[in-house]
Amino acid sequence: MNISIEKKEFSEAVYIASRFAERKSATLPALSSILLIAGDEGIKLRATNLETGIDLKLTGTVTTDGVVAIPATILQQIASAFTQEGKITLEHLGDILVITSGTGKSSLKTVPYDDFPSIPFPENPKNRIVLPGILLKNLFSSIASCASTSTVRPELASIYLSIEGGVLTAVATDSFRLAEKKVPLSNKGTQGKFLIPAKNALDIAQALPDNDIIMSFDEHQCAFVSEKGMVVSRLTNATYPDYRQIIPKESIVEATILRKDFETALKRTTIFSDAFQKVRISFDPKKNTFSFFSKNTDIGESSEVLSAHVSGSALELSFNHRYLSAVLSLTSAESISLTAAGIGRPLIIKGVSDTSLLYLVSPMNQ
Image (cartoon, rainbow, N blue to C red; front, side, top):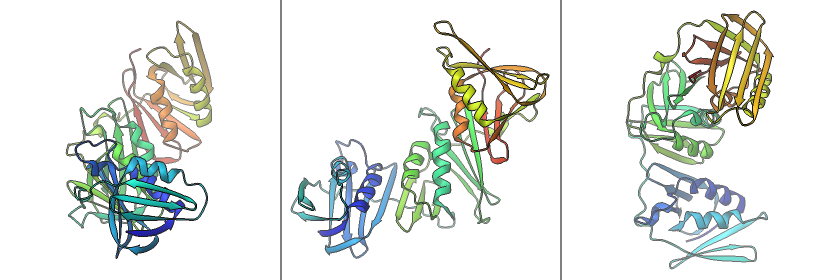
């Protein structure tokens, strides 16, 4: 193999591909490697950890065809060290890959690529839809943090995606809070639903381009295809809980607050939260105020009273402050509404004028 490619493009591609390689694989070194392919289809980078896989297309000059596998960690370190603009050449000689950049030269030991697994592709072409990559990037990046970090219940460590009636609905929950985001689609024909592991979704978000992609899926895999290549993830084989059942149908109080006031007051209040990160919120419809209170026996206490539009009955609830602040990354609305159904019932937070979001958080014991 002998190829030439721009440093910047190569560095960016290696950085993305390395996220899909196994961090450590003593039994199968190919899994912790990046496969570099040069041939009739041009230059490609491939990586997989058997959970996810990527096939990236690169532009460059192929002088001699070939295939080589290089440890992902080492290749990423070398690629990230390139500074100036220009091209690099990669030449495979025996079991060595020689990378030449300007006056510098690096010789890397390769690993056998015969054991490199194929990257599966969804078998059912009917389940496919075209949508902007930036839409999925923002969707995955925002709600993945609401999924469970434990794999005891795989369905809760996943993002639930549903396509129905021209709307893409994404849901993530760890059983303490839940985020639902809805996005309208131009293609109203495709229907389907699947679970993608949240950690896979975060890696995919880093790899997707902003322009249009084709998302296809079957019972076992989902793929995201663009002009720059393909990203594939296995799907979670489980049933997602009927989350709509836990969303209160009625409420006893609602408050509308400026987002910046909510964010600033909450940030100050959390300084005084206790070991359980508890913060108490209060609705006062008579005074049209919404307030935060926290107390730490070792530090002191803090209260913040905000002007708000409050309707309904007075109510006090306590929450983990991390779950309250998480909603701020899910909406850019200038004002937010908080709706409560009573003591011990979940709180619903929405962005005013942002109909795409529903955020639910369960209270702590008073």
